[in-house]
Amino acid sequence: MRMLDDVSDKSINMLSLLLTESEALELIGCLEGLIKKKDFPKHHSHLMSYDYKKEIMICLYEPGKNDNFHPRIQKLILSDE
Image (cartoon, rainbow, N blue to C red; front, side):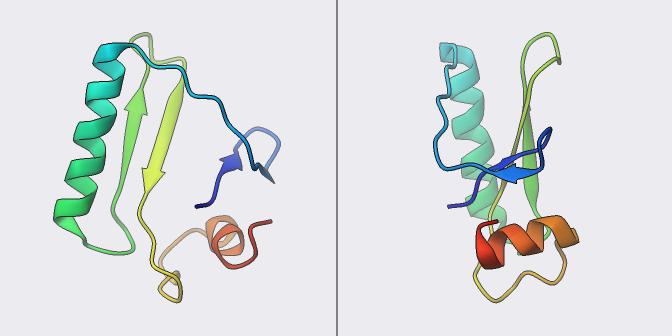
């Protein structure tokens, strides 16, 4: 698992995620879609808040198959930095 704070551009280790029921259901749908498609490593999904002010980007990755990710994401996957 890797987590990145896009604002500070730093890896984070702890995160609290508070979702409404409809947002949780949407997240489940995003995850199911990612797992079913499995077109590594490009496939990702975005979960937006109802007002589009907050966003979660969800990616699936496989160690050693990181070439198609943005260089910042490659660094995060390889070194968790």
